[in-house]
Image (cartoon, rainbow, N blue to C red; front, side, top):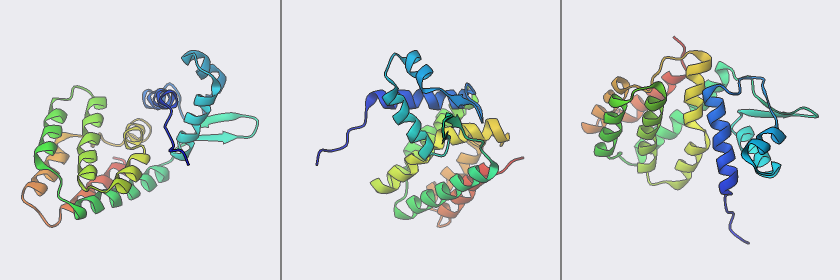
Length: 200
């Protein structure tokens, strides 16, 4: 059996779609026309269709008979379900291995210097990715990545007006817990992630 190789073209289209969801080019209920997107990118419809299927697996896109692809009407319950799974994965990562404090401090410094919500989200997600990666469990990391953390964070802020929890203050408390080897660090991390799904 030949190894499965991810298509760079499909990845580019997928990122274009994610960027469109994050920036609001496509909102809930909007159609995403395969032919139009393929023409814009100068590619065939095949990689566009593949990318849309990946986003359907993330529950961001849905297909309707004779209507094509649409952006799902996302609910607070959808957001909560994603973050419950995410919180469990990150708590498990901490139980497996303590994350590198120096690397977390670097991400925290970048969050302090972030000039926009988009930058805060990017560096905040990198902070959490460092925690999961440090566990040394490729399955855990793969499942975490498959949740589409960055796009869900952006959507939660834009659609549900959740407070921009990707901020340095909240993450500083976590860093301090890791620095002092707090036995409750995993619990604190879980509570921190679940707070992402709360509205003000």
